[in-house]
Amino acid sequence: MEFNYLPLDIQIEFAELLGEHIASSEKILKSDKRLLPVLAVFADNPSDNEIIGLQPSGGIADVDAALRYAIKLLDGKQFRTAVFSYSTQVVLKEDGALYDVIKTYIMKKDGTAAIFYTPFFISGFLRKKVLFKSSVIDEIADSFFDRFMPDE
Image 1 (cartoon, rainbow, N blue to C red):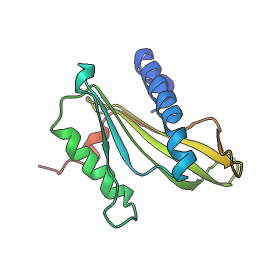
Image 2: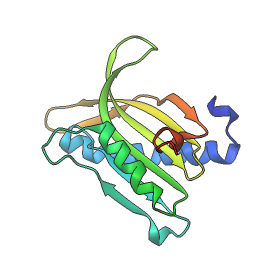
Image 3: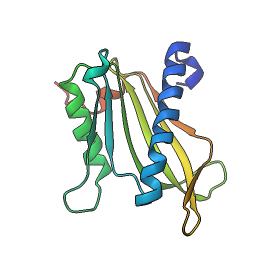
Image 4: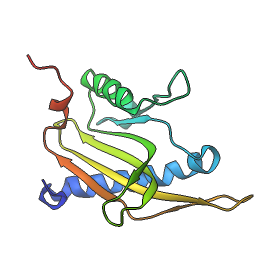
């Protein structure tokens, strides 16, 4: 599925959420140089929104386990949209270079989801600055949660 096949309102919502998330991640990247797994849950009622840190107990993040746990948490919640994200390194197909990236999953309750990679660079010695490149869409899914739900 291609991003432009999603309804326009979902395209706009995903783009806005991605932009807000990347902007809010900048401060964390400046101080920690990485983003540990985090889940942001957006409900119909904004007072029910929440951010859940999924930091590892031993210091090494198992992002696959964190994603499975996030999906399990979402299964029991009423939400409109959720964002699961962390930093990692990947080789992008565009140029074959290794990049530090923020990998972001944006998921709707109905299973519509998009996965993005946003490359970033940290520059400066004393006054650190985080520079972001354009986000790249990795995948669009219309039944994202089916991958994580046990077969019955």
